[in-house]
Image 1: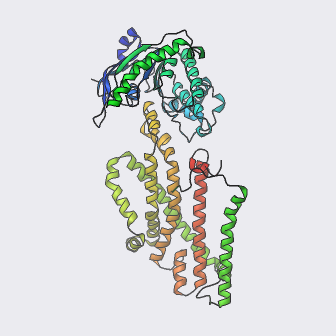
Image 2: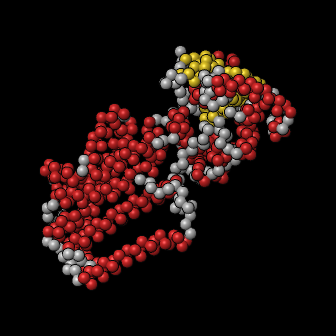
Image 3: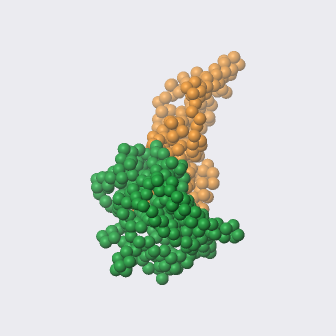
Length: 271
Length: 272
């Protein structure tokens, strides 16, 4: 049942889908049904958020797309760029924690995906430097992770995800642990990067405000087992900035998304 | 055995100096009291030698003692190297194959919990003396390396492991770039324990072997001096053993600190 390959590129290019999940379920070894059945189609270059209560399988969706785990049933298809045959190269993953290697410096952390793919050291270092510059950390290449603040570590993690120039960026509650000001700043930087690089972004969060601010589409999920509760398109004047965050349209969207999310929480409380 | 708390309250300069000065004062006071008691009570050296006589003996017998010290240290070093390599390699094998781990780990525990002093006489029957002594040092020292390395290899951050999987890291790459660096603080902790233990193993085996000869170690000197009621020399040899233990521990702690000082919590508390 599980099928995932680039030979379906014909279909992918026709519909210009970056990721498609059809009838996907995930049952854990202990018998808990975590997800599904779940259907999701993400167009190339789209920025979508998966929003839902804790444990609803948001992260599981990302892990399935990244091939870090296999679906129990259903199909997961990821369009892969021609020539990027090396595993993982089409996908960049940012975890909830910065997940940096504490024993080596920032540049080496960012270079890791290239090193694992056998890219020559000089080229890898140059590309790592460029990726660091794109997140505004060019001056910190020689610092060790522990010398950086939480927001800077997250930027390093983002640079590492970008260093392979992936088509798809998967982000698993990346800014959840940061203070609000830092999160706003990183939100803006992420939007700027998305506009300039044109990547497909799938962003997992449990913050209504963050999801509305960032994404073109907010996919609201139900409590476990996660299914789609609502699929809300966020349309506003691009590029978005701080004025969108304070606009009436923004609070209107937030209210709608919150309303869509509310049943997921009441369901959870009755369980 | 990283006993230091991760964060130590920053001591003031005076407090810092006191941490060194106070033990030295206690040590000097103890020596002085010892010397005085021996002199006032007029205790003969074959019952309790005064510190001054021990130091004099150390100087007088330096030729014999230094040679024994070299022998014991060489045994310790051989046992330590064998234990380090053996412990780390075995832990890596265990980490790669659960079957091997399940088959062999109980025997590693058996070897660890059986007192080495009871095994030494048997080893001396089947092995050449020098080999038997090194094997004893190995047996005592390898378990902490094995168990610490195993613990370290199992403590790899789950997300980092996922990241390596995402980027298609081979098992060798995962071992070299992820597992070994992540396990390094644990391995160094194991080595620090193993250093002291291999000295203990060497001494126990030397005492069990109990034969004289050109290459007899410090422990043998202690046993021999006891038979001859040469108590000052016993103390002198004991002093050397003690110093050797301190130096071994100090060197390994320093190596560990130098290796980890840029990133690991255990090494940061002292500096920042």
